[in-house]
Image (cartoon, rainbow, N blue to C red; front, side):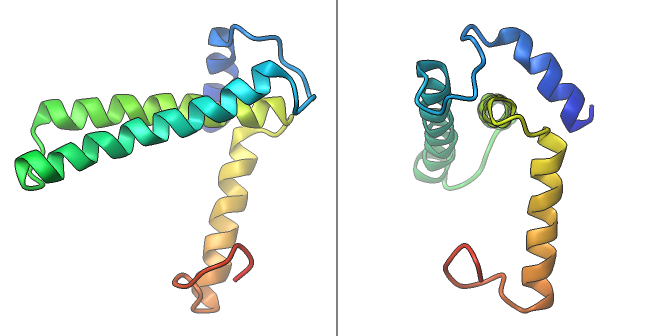
Length: 113
């Protein structure tokens, strides 16, 4: 499935009214949801490291994939609220990474390295 199709299909499950007002409850809920789902993803990995010496079972992989899917939904939703196709978000990210690699700046700190 391509990013833009996913973004369009994922919109069906947004219970809030879409707006470009970044102070709107629906938009803020998406930001908080993204942080929450990213945290749940990290927590699943943490427990695999802590409790299973980093050895993940098929069930563990399934749980992590589900959390990644929830994270993706929030990213797609936030981009939609910003009127940006998810494919553009992905494309810009790859261009940024390619530029950093060419300049040997994949390591380090700062957004504009």
